Amino acid sequence: MLFQKILNQKIIMGKQSKFYLMKKFMGFFLVAALICATVMMCGCTGTGDNTPAVTPAEASTAQATEQPTAAQTSEKTTLKVFHAGSLAKPMEQMEAAYEAEYTDVDVQLYAGGSTKLAKEIVELGKVADVYASADYSLIPGLMVPDYADWYVTFAKNRMVLCYTDKSKYADEVTADNWYEILGKDDVAWAFSDPNLDPCGYRSLMVIQLAEANYNDDMIFDNLVGARSGISHSFDDGVATIHAKDPAPVYPLSIDEKSVNLIAGLEAGNLDYAWEYRSVAKQNADSGVKFIELPEAIDLSSISYADAYAKVQIETAGGMMKGKPIVYGVTVPSNADQPENGEEFVSMLISETGQKIMEDAGQPPIVPAVGFIDIPSSLSALVEMSS
Image (tube, rainbow, N blue to C red; front, side, top):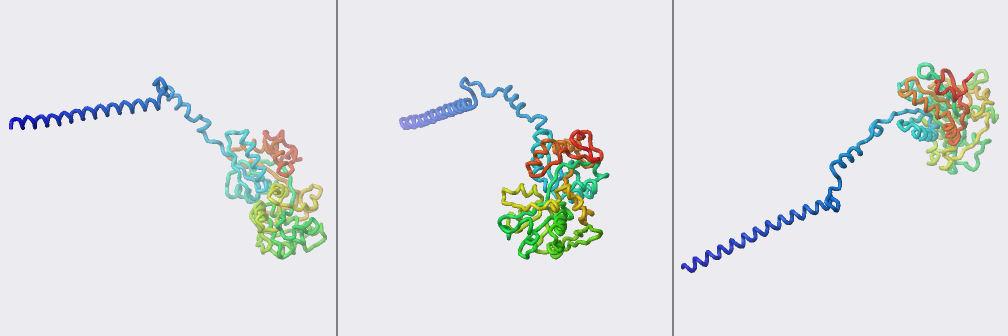
């Protein structure tokens, strides 16, 4: 029995020794693992000599360097430019040129019918820092004196009839027979709204002037009168077109803006559309072609000013009289950024703007002509109207 007790005690002590040894071994293993992990962390973040890759001072400097500068945190000044739809492409070029020189200014372009935009400023109180119109006379007619103190004429244009190779009778249409082609029942054609867009009332002027030029007094009735609510009357040698309620009937259609008609041509929804020559030229790469019309009817020449004046159009924007196509620009009286607006106009009528207009197929007026109370910042760039 004594021997058995001694044997049992040794077994118990042996087990306790093994447990103790295992406990010691596990403790050693954990310490070793902790040391290895520490070394690996140092190796990932340190240099070969165990020096930290970024010292506290360097970290502070790096944080200071990453802080945005005052120029980065300050918001740019917004310059709102309201412009005729036909000026879309040259104004995009103007935007790029202006922002390259005035890096703290963000130019925002708003395109639309010139009449519509002028009314938004005058009647709806919309704020524009620059207003550029396809018809300069809208500025003295609608904006002076309450919404404009001055204006400048800076570019010219002319009316053309656009089409594509997909247009019906594309291989037959000429400057001599276009009105016969448009008179066919299967030809879809369009112009812009004369109550919103100068290109629209100018399209009607061209069609009316065509009667005398082609010696056919039924051109207007056949093309417009029979296919819309637009009519004309005559008094003392002057034709007045009544266009307040266009109400077009197929195959004639009317769009809010003339530049929208280009998409209709390209899609094949329209066969012909009235446009400015500059817009037609700008879209030549997409297949747009155009008929050059006689100067006696295309509203391009000062030599025919008296002939153009024999047509006037009654619109929602007032009575518009026939005259050569001339573009005008001003800084409205309610502008938020009048100084930046003047700088934009200055660039527009300088060599930079003149080249942009020329490249866009729109002849600039050189020098630009100033009217009324021209700002001193522009006086050296304009020739004052007599």
